[in-house]
Amino acid sequence: MDITILAMQAADWPAVERIYLEGIADGNATFETASPGWEKWNLVHHTHSRLVAQENGQVVAWAALTPVSSRQVYRGVAEASIYVAESARGKGIGRRLLIELIRKSELNEIWTLQAGIFPENAASIALHKSCEFREVGVRERIGQLGDRWRNTVLLERRSPIVGV
Image (tube, rainbow, N blue to C red):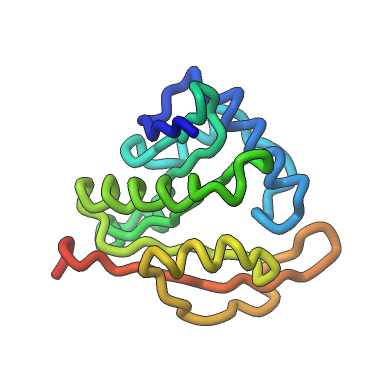
């Protein structure tokens, strides 16, 4: 298995979107119900810390950071998103990608990463915990997906080198 982690480029969007749509269809990855399209996605994510994982030259996973607030006091806090194509799960690609996302976040002065994960997504929760995220708590009935209220597990990782 030849895995390469690279900075995401606009040209990667079709593959990134395909993987994102898989997560949407799964029902346990996001509250989103449709792709936002490149323009909107590009506007809301940090321009740094956008990554893709390629397996044998094909994008099979991606990760990116979204600022949690526009307020200056929260400039070092970001929400981490990571999506792995169904065909690439269970190979350790997500872990490699998340480790690199953490490294990039710290290079860009991010001191706290957070993730809100559906409790049913046990693999994602385990992945984040394996990369030093801690469970803060469960946000009960935080949002609706269709007509169903959903909980999320809130996890966070404080950098041991930024903001100490």
